[in-house]
Amino acid sequence: MENLPNRELENQEVLTCPHGADPAECEACWLEKQPAWQTIEKLQKGGPFERSDRHSADCTIESEGKKFRIEVIEKGEDPEIKNVHRLFLKTFGKEEIDPQKVTREAVDGYSPDWNTHFPKYRIVTVKDERGRLASVFTGAQLDVLDENGKPTGEAVFSVGYAVTAETKRQKGLAREAYISALIDAAKQAKDEGKTLKFAIGECTYTSEKFWNNVGWKRIYAQTKDKKNYAELKYMQPALDFDEETGKPTEDADECPEHLMIDSFGRNPPNTEEVKRSYEALLHYNGDWPESAFESSKAHQTHIKYMTGFKTKFKRFLDDHPQLIYLDAENREKARQQGIKIKEHTAADRGETGKEDF
Image (cartoon, rainbow, N blue to C red; front, side):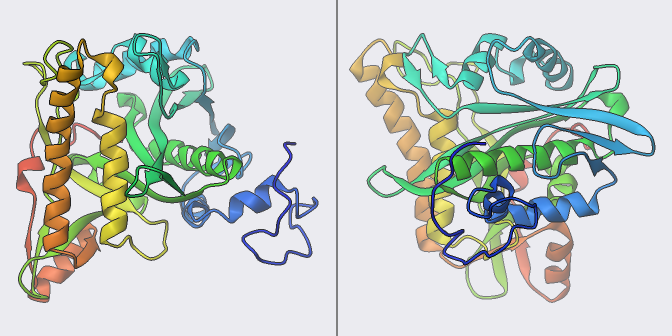
């Protein structure tokens, strides 16, 4: 077992360890002090599966005699990434996913072409008893930065993809993969002396039911009075840029999405925390380093493009600081009480059920 910091758990005196270990060294005790543990425990109790180890991301899950194995891919050379890529390709299409090379570099947290390190991308896999890939959940733990670009000691878990093979959907596998992803992220935060405070992601309207069921909500801002709210208009920036000019490539489109967030059952994020989490998300997904471009001028063009996105979003929050967080059920209740809610309808596109977990 690793050497853990010799200090009281979150400044609380712990006399005994429920796991039968030294409370000052018990990894499970430290993990349970992360804010995310409240959500992890709730999801474990509410799902159909029994987990072989409730404190480990890697485990076996079982329901009605059927077993699956959950494992986290931690190295870019892992051969299973080939099968993950195949499932992504079948679900989303070539134009919506990264090449295998990019995915492998993301898992390692290093691009040799750019000579740049970045947060490691985690891939959680769920396999059936025959070793066939059934579900995949991806994401990365990101540092929350202050106004000077320095880490605050808090982190946000950014979700990438949630995908389940067509024959294995609606069985709770994506939910179990998400639980493992949160455990993995919470452990990483613990090991680095950070607090995993939120989970955030760009979500389509077709998958909102799944995200609501695991605790996520959309973000709305008061626009006129307590009876008028509008959903934050989130736009995913272009994710591919011309190395010579710094401008988005011709096939790289900006895309409206629903921005959703989970505060793990604690106080919802205030306006400043939403800004910081949003900035961490965009920095990871869209900010390219200078080494990615052929000139400093091209890099400055890229920075100007990304700054425009961030400024517009933050300006809206500055003008509308009063926020509420609503899932689909509570939005309907709010409307019945006479509250007017304007949705980010541009993000509602595609066919319902495409991302059926």
